[in-house]
Image (cartoon, rainbow over all chains, first blue to last red):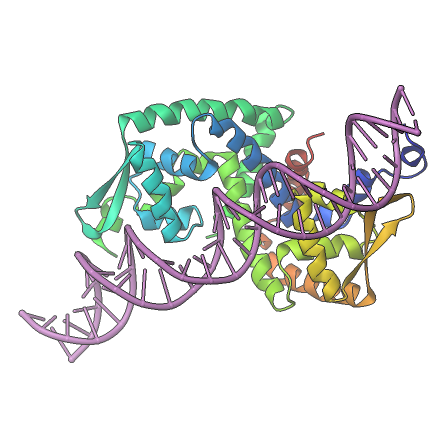
Length: 155
Length: 155
DNA sequence: CCCAAATAATTGACATTCTCAACGGTTCGT
DNA sequence: ACGAACCGTTGAGAATGTCAATTATTTGGG
């Protein structure tokens, strides 16, 4: 143990005791950064990232979203959705279908291969997700989800 | 009301009922995206972004962090911290001080102007932050902070 | 019905941010 | 004393974010 660690708080603790560390937005950002990093490493083996995983998840869930709906839901620019879907479509994981009700819009669906890959990717994400949440009771987990929903969907 | 809205769930609701929408990581990402956007628009008037605001906050809070500590705490690459501090230092808001205990390290402090700007920026952030949290009781607010801390600082 | 305005997807340009590798100066362990 | 590890810095290249313009389609008002 170094002298500094005995005589005064270590740098890590000084930062954790800071005003910023008590700020909800900061905690949100840091928790998200951690979850994102964990998810991305888990998904890398399947050739996915958090973004493409989210798109694939919605396509595989029979939500049949249009690209605009995806953009709003994932907080992305419509042009980013184009690139995202291009990548998945080239890998034959998803398909664009012209919406019969509005031929401007494309409805996104998953192929069988897309559903299969998503199932595997979901398992991988769940496996690492447990690391951080193992110490949290199911009750707290549900509480957290509820409170986050209030922030994620305020209206 | 359009026929589609009466006969089946609207696109927005279909997405919110999806499996992905129940995922904690997704809620975290979306809540963070919203908070970040709100903070950034509030900070723009002061020439700050969430990142530079965070750095300034720690400098103004007498935490005296080194650049490496900042990088770890904010989940940034050390090279990004350099650019961030360069910007703040050129505006005379913060100062780099060689750490007497370790001359490789720079300790960051805030100038009087930096503290003054931070105080104003903090007010601006608080003003918009209340919008999303107004419907949340102080009790829930504290619960959420506690649960997020578990995810943000797992060790 | 017709036309202007609004909307969905796409493209391309540009800025910002992320990620890495390399380097000089400093400290640490042995 | 010496090699390994570490801090800050620089620079390059990839990935992401942001925005304007374009085409095709829908919508609403006259």
